[in-house]
Image (cartoon, rainbow, N blue to C red; front, top):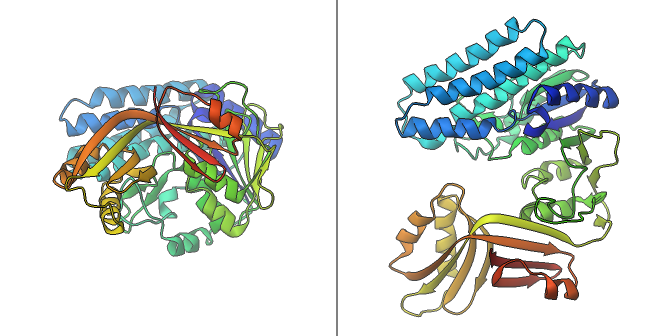
Length: 413
């Protein structure tokens, strides 16, 4: 089978859903496992519902807005929308019932039970529309197949159970399912981390020993820089697994960090192509070589924090101190994207998705004095040359680090 993943931009409105038909007409829809994200910015809207719920504010209006957006798309897609409208209504009723009955104060647990609605809606709509267009498919609830532990918002996959379940499926069919989602042993929804739909597709490809996996984007493939921040970007036509893992680690937005390992393990070719030009070459990620064309790659991560810790008693920052700090950061789900140490000082570039950095700092306040630079940017240059390193400038430079062919610069912009 081939695994196709369509992100939120590819199903953001009725016209985008209709375009999927054109993509499938050009690629074929036999032996396809299609993974679909929530439509447009639906996940963001559902995150707002969770916030309102925990602040004991009226979340009903936001839910009504989300429901109306999906109903509008359905009205434009279907001549007789009554059946799919009933499915949408049922999904919203189930969510409202959960929010009414829920007694759990666990934010992450509630988050996962709410935001999963986006993928359930998008896949129901797309599956029914493709069936109406003559592309017969089977809709699957991915939560019945991807099994995880109970780490909500960052579910850890139980590979043994998940593989066993997927291998019970009949091959040679066309399946439509959700990205981003899994379920724990009690069938409560878990999510695989933000932007986890790519990872879902890689899990399925691995479990089914797929022929290939393709992510369909609104860009021509993997570019050497994000066109939102850099001009004159270049398409990377071929990337090795190792190079793709490096790019994902440093924050290349087109490749989800967890995606590569399941594919590399089974040597499954990975393509990134444009749903606006499905016949174009795109990017191929597979074994062999490194990068073609061999050009510098620019990666930027915004909304970072530069935290500099200095020991209060001027003792050395030894391995045991660093280990204790990293253990606490891991517990609070704060990601370290760069570190630089001296005898008594440790500088960390941190990504704080769950806004836990103040908790970390409070816990370390008796051992370290701390300097906190908020909302800095981390630029990573792969395959740079000396001239580029010398003249690259983005804002006020706070820290610079070079490891082999990778230059990283933290700047205040």
